[in-house]
Image (cartoon, rainbow, N blue to C red):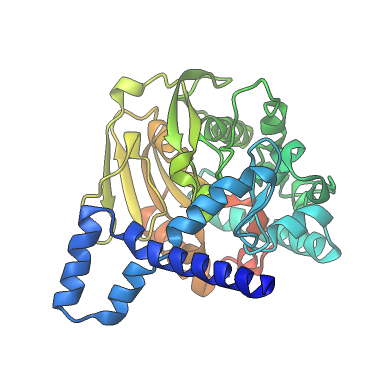
Amino acid sequence: MKHKAAIKVFLACSLALVLAVPAVNLSEVSARAHAQRLISQKKTDRLVQLLFNSDFLMTRFSALTWRTGLSTSPANVVVGQEGWLYLGDGHDNNTSAQRFGESANDARLARDMGQNLLAWNRWLRAQGVKAFAVVVGADKHRIYNDHLPDWANLQHTARIRALLDGPARPLIADPAPALRQLSGDDAPHTYYRSDTHWNMWGAAISMETLRQTLTQQGLSLNWALTSPPTIDHTGTRIGGDLASFLRIQATLTEQEPHPALLNREAIKSDVREMDTGKALKAGDFGRLQYPGHTVQVVTEGAANDLKVLWLRDSFGIAQSPLMAANFRETIQLHWGRALDEQARLFVDLVRQQKPDLVVITVVERVLPANLFLVPPPQE
């Protein structure tokens, strides 16, 4: 009898919870109006989805559990210590690759990639390009490893060691050493706790590494950032992409240190789709998210009257206003699109636009990839 009573209580609680879900989902006026439209349109399947959407339960559950180290999306997010989040194995086996470090295949790919970058450098120079650099978007695992869970922090050699130690080293702007020096608990963070990427301060450090790399290649530059970089002021923003995977983005606040710019008042960027000339809305100083198309950013008050062909990924988001501050014109597109089909688009842009510089910003975890082994044209 006791078992039957317990079952009845369980079923009653479950039924009450199921019935409560539609009430919660219809608590907002906009949701009720949407439900009425679906009823009038007789879209029963979408109405059921609206009424019994349990996202809010997952949000509340995740908000309760993530601080204990439990990830509700383990393929996307590894929960570290003291509120730090890291990218999971659902993205290029990121955590496992960082745990076990450089493999024999990684070393081979890195050596081949180094030789390929040298070949591209020779081809670009033959096209009139003055300098070529690859900025490595260092994996957060490698910079803030002290906050990883113990099982994930094995401190093995970086997977791109053979690239960094090889003959293409003069082309590589690797900000990881400088970023690690600034990773102490008392220092302003260079990466967001709840995001995969570096913040504006981390981007400024990476730009200083780029400046050093270009200078060592013989380029004389004015620089919009102080050298070494300094912080002008600190703002705030909501949680980042990793927090979004856990559905807690709106509940978190991140610090955003803004680097000092010497020409801040002179910067005004015109941002357009290159193919159509359509004006695009960008953030401060040409801050751009993921460029889905080839984008042209022109900044009249930039520190250098130079044109840069910039192949980038999401690590270029925080860099983009700093690139605009430093270079009068940047032509931006994702490196994956540029290097696809035997780098046809990349080659065409170099030939047609005749850039002064070519810069690639690429996240570290994808560098040991065949895409970066595409050879230059044989001319």
